[in-house]
Length: 378
Image (cartoon, rainbow, N blue to C red; front, side, top):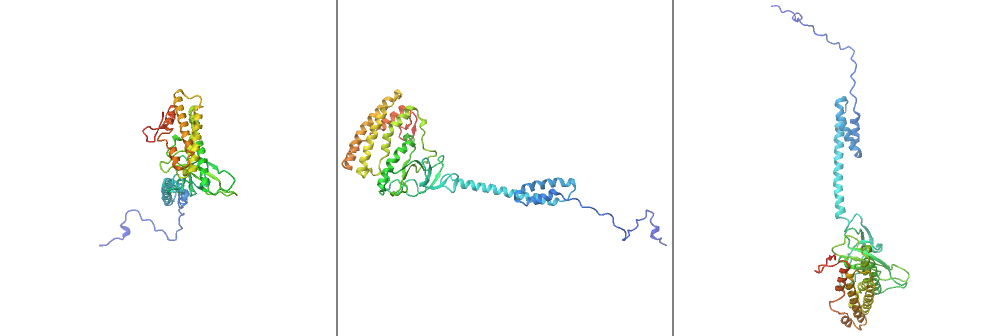
């Protein structure tokens, strides 16, 4: 059987002729343009401060590339990833750093309020300043006076807890050299008392505080620091506001009463440390008490315009002060400490009962009758 040639078997269209290897090439195909947003996204994301902008441009590029047919999707993805990572890291550092700063300002760096504190010394303190002494406001040694010897302090705001507040300063008297600490201490006791009553005329309303001061141990004739700094201090229950009192808080009758009681109060607060061991110091204080009490009694009787309900109690207080003045004057002439104690001893009675009644009648705060130290308003 004869097989026909293959060309005769095909009845369809003929196959296209093979291209000649020597035929000229067609026109070249141009690549799609590169997205400028994608490039900018990656570049900006590598710059720490501009990473947020790089993140935004990368997102915009990824949204536009499918529609405009531009290249650079990979660059946009990289820019978005890098920018997002940098932004996340910066946020973490900010949160952690802020928490650590808050913890420091609340707990570290200072005894009290570190944001507004200032390191200094006793010589930097002015009247009205609140501060935290480095070694505490009072001596811890038995038998020592209340003079501070460590000069380091931290000056703090008065509107927060503070162990001490300066209520006044004054210069030691005389131009001569003073080398006796006892003489300087005596001036400090006497000089601080009137400054205290300028600062807080109504001592009944003060919290539980103690009195201290700083004075130079000796003063040369040629100069040197002669300033005594007087302050109130508390070891516990720290005041959270200035203890300075505003005279405008009282009416005319109350203010006249407080001024009248000032001589007696100043004498009382000038009590020397050596009152139990030094006859001269004890008798001098007794004389001040006698004069102060008599002066206060005189001023109380001279007050005009008191409310009727206060006349009796104020008169009774003046009479009691006169009686105590006589006792104190007798003690000021005692020949010995033993005799001083006998003359001074007038039992448990003093002017506090009459003073309590007078204050109540005038509308001034008084201590709770239960004796718990709390104040009560009349």
